[in-house]
Image (cartoon, rainbow, N blue to C red; front, side, top):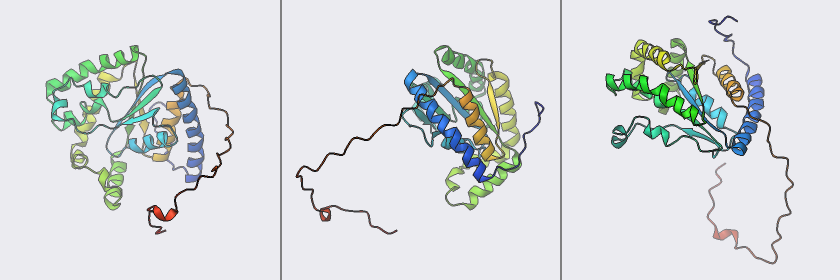
Length: 267
């Protein structure tokens, strides 16, 4: 396949997808145990357009992992106090300690995207971000943090389909914010902002990895497979353990069940 060719977009069957996902999730657990045992630190950024599939990929990565090791950070709108801080300050507070990997569901790149396009920051602040971001990321890398950046790329047509699906499904409508809807009218501006961002921050030490996310199942498998390849883990899965015998009651009489309040068994 050529460098600029798009991969086959034929949908994976659910059976094949789930079989591959289980294999990859087993590897993620191995990776987790190695990170915990060695004190390794990693930061993974998930960026892209609205409904590009970032959240679904993060969910599959963390599904079988220990949340004390594999942590997810999805920060809300900054408070008035945070708006007066050094821009990167609130993100620094969530960087990993030894034995942790942090997944940012959107990150400091908000300034290069939504804040810039929607006018939430000044042009001077935007330009300063583009200048300082590469240096900030190089500092993280020099400190021993493995920084991995993913951009989820979705076509206009597929984003439209996913938006419609969210509108029709009551369990997904919360995913559509007024900002998401307004972004539809600024598609070109977001494209330009992304291109400018890449031009300044696609650096050798921390390049952008683009994920073709028009087919969700393929995107999830591809990003997990790539993430595993970016961390030099070894299989440190604990050996199977033997459960000890449970302690006997020893004459202790427990209170009657009638004294407890149970959840009604509706089902």
